[in-house]
Length: 371
Image (cartoon, rainbow, N blue to C red; front, side, top):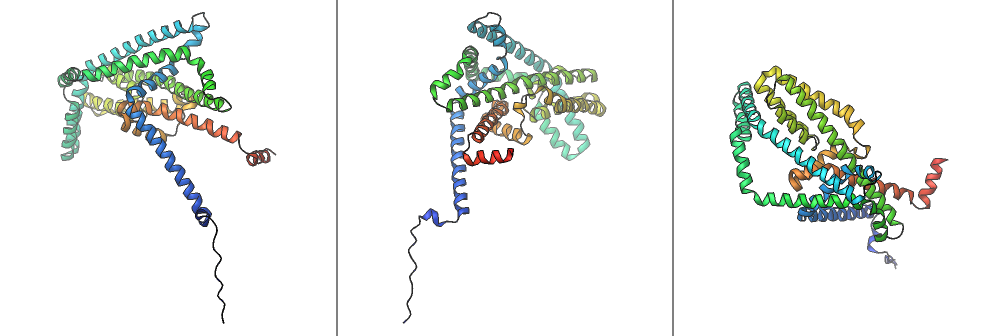
């Protein structure tokens, strides 16, 4: 008689029956899904409340740019409220004057730029044959004549009063927030300590300071670099006799706030206008001017002027710009890089503090590394 031994019942939980590699993969998958869900929900909330979130972000960027003025005024006996009010007044005058100059330059140069693009399309069409006809048609459709452009702007103003109202409301809200951020920004640490008692307040304060420093570095560096690029490219186009140099310089200044994409588009327009009005030789000289300025920016201005807090990988910048433009259009593209820099700054603070506050095993490994 043969006795068959029955296997003992497995008392382990179902999760423990899986191999360790499968359990680790499942844990990582759950963490990634949770992180993506939280990120998607945050983006959804930001987009749905963009009437408030966009002015808040713009106010933070303006505050980061103007924050060094406050200590300078306070040291000279000006109260924080008066200093914030004076700074906001100068900001309004500077922004209004800058927008007026940019719009005036673009409007006055629009007929010349549009005519140059149309003539460039004719030249390209003659070079490329049948394929060039399609390029010519696309340029004619995108550029239009100067009068058509002005008529479109006028029609847009008349039919877009709701958009103008939203812009004015957002501008007033952003200006009010800039005033309060400048006046009461020094109380940030006390407010965080009251809201988060214990050791977590130091981490929150460090994250806020790092994010603010990243935005400040972006705004100051980008504004100065945009001014330098626009000035030198405008001078080069004036020397070459390219019409509409002032408007093209304004395009370069505005495009500098959108990395890669803005510089490429503004430089392409400048070269096409030079091609239409001066021929291939002038276009090549204009291309040389644009490339030389961009090379100086990438190799000298960026490392010297731009803060180290906004050193992002080019792939990260491209993804951020594309994602920002898909979420909120041109405003999203403008805000994508500083927001990404602030987010990476927060992550770096959390990573560093997590390493410092590790368990005994991490401290033992650290001591072994030092020995």
